[in-house]
Figure 1 (cartoon, rainbow, N blue to C red):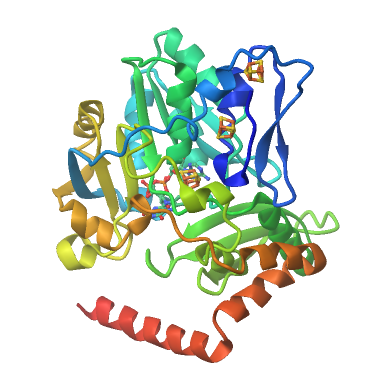
Figure 2 (cartoon, rainbow, N blue to C red; figure 1 turned 90 degrees about the vertical axis):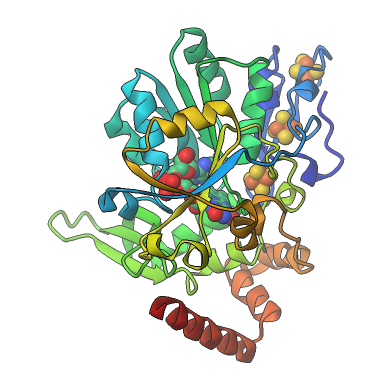
Length: 395
Ligand SMILES: Cc1cc2nc3c(=O)[nH]c(=O)nc-3n(C[C@H](O)[C@H](O)[C@H](O)COP(=O)(O)OP(=O)(O)OC[C@H]3O[C@@H](n4cnc5c(N)ncnc54)[C@H](O)[C@@H]3O)c2cc1C
Ligand code: SF4
Ligand code: SF4
Ligand code: SF4
């Protein structure tokens, strides 16, 4: 049975819990809000399946892509509502048009992130867009297997560790399975996410949140905003919703996330990136695209697509009428997006952050950010970033 020596040995994929034949495993939250398996020893029959399906215990070998492209959807409206160049949408639509099913991450009614599936283009909208929180997998591997056995095409999208887990959970390849992973910086704490949303609601005197985007592009793809819309409190039926739009560099949750303060421990030693997920395609932001394919860049989003398998190549070929694709160099793409290959380092202040979090909750984020970058240095960095952005835009 699964015995975790270190929290970093579990990416929270839930393959063990979904596959356990005696339902001896439940996924339970730790103090950081991340899910880990808990085994009910009385129900365990020691079959060893949980260990065999674990993508951390059984990592795949690293792989280089067969080809890579800078790409963007030809319809600006699709790009505007997508995080990068909007390539996920046509890939998913092509599978749905063939009577297939698409799995991906959505917000649930409490604005937690969960995996779900879509069977129509209308349902696809909720899977669109990056949600920078770890998605809870529910029974999605089992459910995908059911669709596959029924002969339906399945496109399963997710983080590299979720794709690796799916492959282990399925136990064999299916001709009708297509997998797409996203480049993954790491996933931030669901507990911090919940507290952040509560504090926002409190500040806005709002009853509830009505819409949320991590990648609002009104100020461009690079200078994206976090947009949150609130329903007025007190049942004021006719009052209009109010939205806050915060540049990601000023948003508390995004700042802590991008400084790696509260990522899942496994994200500092990821066993699934660098082609180890086994995904057919990998999609990412093509940061640095202005240096290599300037004509493509209009600051509305350009995707990087890594083609990892012939099946991925066929899937991409099927959507080229909707996606402008230009071949690119892997090394150029990696230069500006190291997370595709390498895990980020665990900040030495992470343990201190969680100790402080128990005491002062969200205030700990600001506190640790200040320790990482004292105010004077922050101002200087922000000035440098402003000048660099200006220069890049002028090109
Ligand atoms: C936690 C996280 C970290 C990321 N880190 C990087 C990075 O370091 N570098 C980089 O280039 N890109 C990163 N991305 C990916 C990037 O933000 C875009 O999602 C990706 O380029 C696809 O964009 P798109 O325009 O094609 O489609 P979109 O419509 O914007 O993306 C939708 C796709 O993202 C998936 N998705 C969204 N949220 C989650 C989630 N929480 N868990 C699993 N799958 C999710 C959906 O299932 C769907 O497949 C990250 C995304 C997430 C969620
Ligand atoms: S060893 Fe078998 S029965 Fe025991 S927890 Fe693992 S999968 Fe379940
Ligand atoms: S990585 Fe996945 S399969 Fe392995 S112990 Fe964690 S939840 Fe279970
Ligand atoms: S960094 Fe690795 S372990 Fe963390 S969520 Fe991404 S793929 Fe999973």
